[in-house]
Length: 221
Ligand code: E4P
Image (cartoon, rainbow, N blue to C red; front, side, top):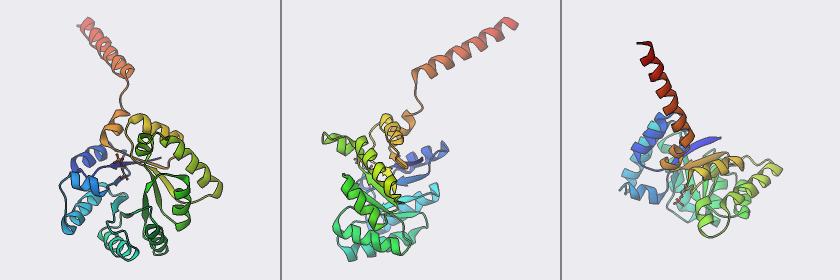
């Protein structure tokens, strides 16, 4: 299973990378805006900075929603760095564009996916990654993890190459549940990734080990 971080914040990307477990990065226009990055030049320069930090797949989202616009933007993004994955929304022109990019060897991430039907279309178009938005599905009183299971079942039956990239992750438990459900990749905020480290029994056990070690050292003096 691969781990991506879901942010455009360079410090957070660096911190996850330093842990030695980071395989890639996903961004979206909201995450870029959160970092105060706007304008084509600044946005592109930021993608290049992220690619230099991580050396793994970096999803960069198109803004255009018409076929010609998506193709133009996607080609320009793909030229920025070999690690760029063009993120395309799950809309009619997006599916057509994914089919085109796939024929050109340009990697894609089909985003804003909320149903198994959408997942079938993206796989048929040749998407490299598929991003079901788990947290937003949960927010609408459906079951995001169950969606991952359904898509995994369908992709396994037909041996689709598209990788399930579980997105909109809200907790460490989400990461574990998506891993259990066959997601190939999970993209999560730094807090959810770091949360995987935590268990109270680890802290209690470590405190005990260190105390026993100190006691033994003291007794030997
Ligand atoms: C990642 O590709 C998505 O854009 C992101 O996970 C959406 O997460 P959110 O629902 O927390 O905004």
